[in-house]
Image 1 (tube, rainbow, N blue to C red):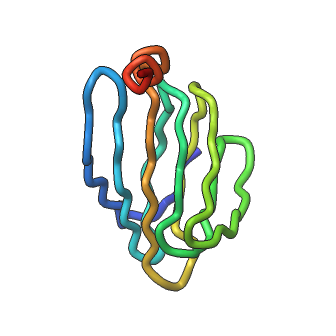
Image 2 (image 1 turned 180 degrees about the vertical axis):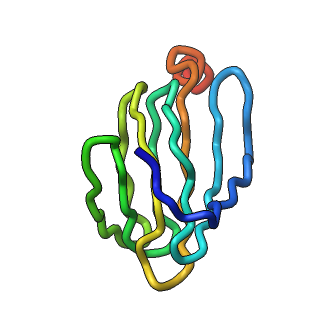
Length: 108
């Protein structure tokens, strides 16, 4: 349900308002986020290539990702994330709190 590693990934919140939360995550080798649940749908874009080890409570899996690669997940995802790489990695996570406000903001 959670990794036993005690090194924590470091979150740097870049924006947090009613529409979005944007966080840069920096992971030393072996660092973890700790067990958490996403309240909103979210996107992740890797800044540095590496392997994320995902524990979803039922199993663990390694997911290799290249720099610039992105993925998305729905709200309600519960997991712990660990840097399974031998080097430091970083990614940016964008949580969409209010899709209608976000897209309405960009209408002309």
